[in-house]
Amino acid sequence: MSILSAPKNLTRNVLIGMATGVMIASAFYYGQHLIPSSIFSGVEKYIFNLGGQIFKNLLMLVVVPLVFFSLVSGISSLSNMVKLGSIATKTIGLYLFTTGIAVSLALLFGWIFDISGSTATREYEAVTGDSSLYDTVLRIFPNNMFGAFIENNMLGIVFISILFGIALNLTDELTDGLSKTFEKFNIVFLKIVLLIMSFAPIGVFCLMGSYVMQYGLDIFGDLAQYVLLLIFVLIFHLIFTYSLILKLFANLNPLIFFKKMRNVALFAFSTSSSAATIPVTLKTVTDDLGVKKDVSSFVVPVGATINMDGTAIMQGLATMFIAASTPEIDLSLVQYGQIILLAIITSIGTAAVPSAGIITLTLILSSLGLPLEKIGLILAVDRILDMLRTSVNVCGDAAVSCIVAKSENELDEQIFNK
Image 1 (cartoon, helix red, strand yellow):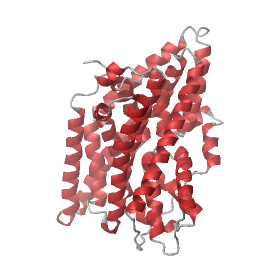
Image 2 (cartoon, one colour):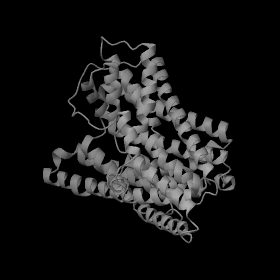
Image 3 (cartoon, one colour):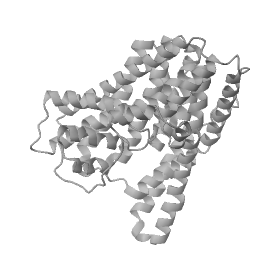
Image 4 (cartoon, helix red, strand yellow):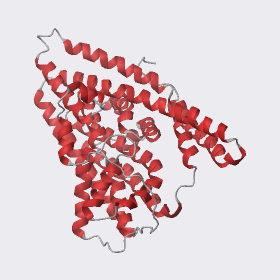
């Protein structure tokens, strides 16, 4: 086994950790009247919450340096700078294309199944965040290089990494092959990722337990139709859309793809963060799917920033659900088109962190004149659905990586089919 191989039986152990966390936390949640409150709160805070947060922190710890070194080493190794422009154009184009399909599917199935909203409302704390196009574009060009790294500004980090990689590529002879040093740093951080992955079953146990200890298992209530339909559309998009584009654009076997992506999907599900899953996604795309580093190191970090297919599906269905619960609102065909356009645009600025899509949902609702207070209905069930949305997003990142790599002759199909 290679020193850069994934831990043995990782998928099985993660699933065991997930199931065990749910069962133990359920026993505490539904039996809390029999348990002293001090013990209940202690277990929730110091075992589940603390353990889950530590695991997420460890994943986030390596995101910025791994993205930076991976992107810089990938670009600096390119023999032709024109190729970078080709990769970037195809990547962004495919991401926006799949996001358009995602929100269109959400609206189509919402119309077919005649999604109906509830008139009940719940209290919610207003969400805030920069979601305007102006702020999104400005974040791409930070005025402080180190500030972008400190603030985890992924758009800015990607831009800085590309700029640094191009400069390193053009000056490699003058710097005595400095690019090789960045390749070595990249290997070191990949190994750190593997060390963290070995604790994944414990981390997933704590993350799932933390959720169940807080909300229990019965959170659907009168939102059952919205929840079930959203899950259906997410799975449909995951299986149908990605299988279709893999076959049509790259002639690759979708079954092999999904089999190799199961670990990444589980990580994404447990963390609810595309950014936190970047290290695992990068390693799987490169080592298991055969995508060359100069493609994966660009496509995956960019995807974690702008590829939000799962979020777009949520925004489409949530908008229809809230509109249906507002008697005076009847969405027109033009407004459906507006939802699609806004979902595509706002996906570029959606942070790759848990429930960030709720922030951009407020922009869509306000533009259509829908009541923002009804976001409380969506927040009631958003946490568990966000986990599934993130799994869809990272699978989309990997699928686009394979397609772009195949078009650039940067895909090792022997590794993919192995």
